[in-house]
Length: 220
Image 1: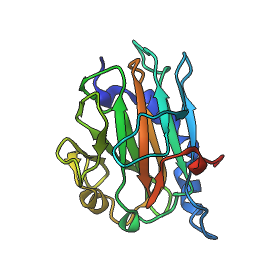
Image 2 (image 1 turned 90 degrees about the vertical axis):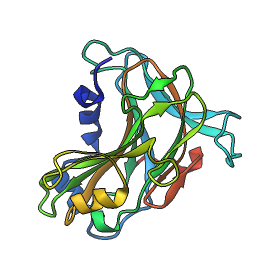
Image 3 (image 1 turned 45 degrees about the horizontal axis):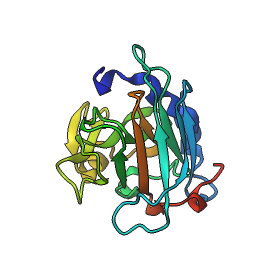
């Protein structure tokens, strides 16, 4: 498999949330409650809500997000799947709260290769892109595992990329905020790369909103 940092095709697609400049402008006039929509790269990949009794600890709503990927080798430009979080654009990095999620790899164990990962993209107030922070687990256990820099560190953490911090590996969220001081959020999404792996995602927490069932979904 290719190293995660070379898999740029799927990450680029998530810019569908809009350009950085447009995202900054979304700050004006108030903000709707965050909602979700799904995307995929075709080739049999898909993302949707699934009715299932397979749930993380403490969750009893019998629903989870199903991210199913196909084998996208050698380019990995198809076969990915993901989630876009809407209505978070323009929030200052300093006030954007930490995020987390639960994941279960249904047909794989071993190094995660950074997939799936929750990506928070940033821009300057003028709309110039300024990198991102990416939250993921190091290892896929095959059981439900929380991806959190608080409750499951050091197996989980934020990789940071910005002008101030060109690359920092597996940090806490407050370090991401420091590296993006003065920036605003331009997009938030989760992507699973095209490795032919099926994932269950639940209790995705972004901007203090917990997404655990289809009622949390929206058209964006």
